[in-house]
Length: 553
Ligand SMILES: Cc1cc2nc3c(=O)[nH]c(=O)nc-3n(C[C@H](O)[C@H](O)[C@H](O)COP(=O)(O)OP(=O)(O)OC[C@H]3O[C@@H](n4cnc5c(N)ncnc54)[C@H](O)[C@@H]3O)c2cc1C
Image 1 (tube, protein in one colour):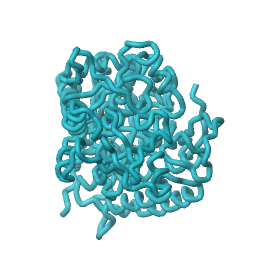
Image 2 (cartoon, helix red, strand yellow):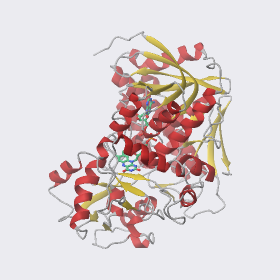
Image 3 (tube, protein in one colour):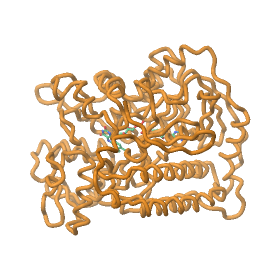
């Protein structure tokens, strides 16, 4: 089947262009609009359901200033600042801790129902090694994104659904906009703006697979394919923490679902095949320690032959906690959780849940100043912190700054029409590949095969150098990718971003010659090197790729 190539082309001007309509993009757009800017969100999916928040989230982290030691801005800053997260104290204070209470208020106003105790106070739980009970539990988690989207449309923020952006436009050392195409009808878009907030997501789970080998059956949102990092890097922004910002978790066996925050914070036990509860060996907070410890601890049990299976045992929980966990939180995170349990013929009250280690998602951050602006002027980073509140608050803080700068500018920067035409040709090229060509999925599968093998939970330099050679070989087939329709055209363009993301990430991990800060171990550098207290940074200068280290001030 062939689809006629549409020549339709549209140019849209705006003040603040928000790329990505996930939690971070929504936060950014709301903040910029509140400050009087003309705002356009561009989203590959549909605002109401796109992004990791689209299917539902069951917890929202927020400090609420009830205790100076554990529930305050200072406590949040202390916990999140540092190279592990690639953010400074100022970033955390300005972009997360101080915004959290405001976001809670906004979410309640749009209809989010936080679970409350009988006395009317919030039910708050602690998780992932955090010192305070920062997690608010959400009763109607599946609807959060719809509520926020309704607010956004009601505020008069412009939204372009179903448009995939592929490249940023620049005017010297200033961002000038972006180009993209409609994934349903092939229309081409030139988007011009005074400032741009990048909010395309900091998790790309399609780079490795779990036991199902299905790249769409993932814990995190499978439509993040590295555009956030790749587009920024290609436009000249510095990228950091590709080596450290990688994520993994435990999944119900064969089912790419979230839920570990609920299970751990409610007091679930993780057991190995010998029936031993073992997480105390890996962190004093047992299952409720940092996610990295749970993942690497589980991996160690497998290495030692004590697993699989891995079992999550909730049978000892109270009836009330079981009910909240199984019937409110889990389906709030992923609507089909109950179907999975039914098909397995189990319930938390009577059966342990078999789990597995998930795929590993790659990430990375745009290096930013204290106003969340990158070295490419006018380009702001919206995806600065993990999880839902991190995304929403970080996006909100970036939106404030992007609106401020746009407000001080008279004109939209000039866009380079030659660069636009070149990108248009590049985007649509897969539609004109003759003969059989290469299916985008086969191209992507080859990348995943290499990443699964050399960039899994254990890595070393020799393996990663081979991985780079294999990725270069795969890249040599990029022009053979054939798209039969616009849907496949999206996949083809995603696959190219995915490849670049993997190349950059592999190069960054080679530089992190230590173990202990990331979700993987280096077999050639098994110990933590306390002196490596700096971020690996990648960027381009005059078309040449550079790599270096930077200390976070
Ligand atoms: C099922 C699930 C449950 C979760 N539960 C919780 C929870 O309970 N609590 C919690 O704190 N966190 C939770 N998380 C994590 C949290 O939802 C995410 O960290 C957060 O929503 C990320 O938001 P984001 O905007 O940074 O990225 P994303 O959600 O990835 O948003 C990026 C957006 O950009 C779009 N996009 C990407 N590339 C392009 C492109 N090239 N062109 C156009 N658009 C593009 C995507 O479609 C997407 O909508 C959960 C995640 C999942 C998947």
